[in-house]
Length: 192
Picture 1 (tube, rainbow, N blue to C red):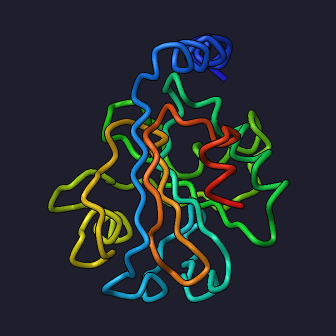
Picture 2 (cartoon, rainbow, N blue to C red):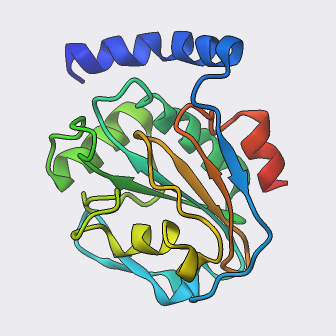
Picture 3 (cartoon, one colour):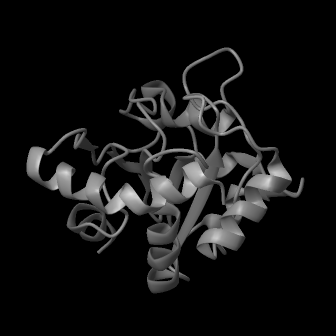
């Protein structure tokens, strides 16, 4: 872990405190609309190069998170791992590292190593890709940000660690901004 990463990990509780006081970046969007195109038709490439077929995620809730190693919210990796341990096998968490906000400079192997070594991450980490709306946007994020595919949502990640919740039937139910803690009451309530 670099000095910058250690500093960010140390100040993360302060970021959480400020968020509680000022309710900054706390937008939460939800809907009960059904997906137009099936979520389970998607797949993603894991950091080791293997393909993850989303059909294997049927009957589970899925929390999809765009991540980065050099962000003030990077310590959420630890919270995501705690949530994963508490809620599996009924919840799958998928991390999508991205450099959209210029805070993920590592290659796929280094990212996976960083996650495992510093936060004990055992949930799947995908290959680094683009998550914002762009011609080279990751296919999963194309589905997450296109209401004509997911049924309602157009919110692209506004920062690292935005979260999308898919229900057991493959419907997008929630979008949480980056500052929303994975262990906070809003996400835990949505998972209940």
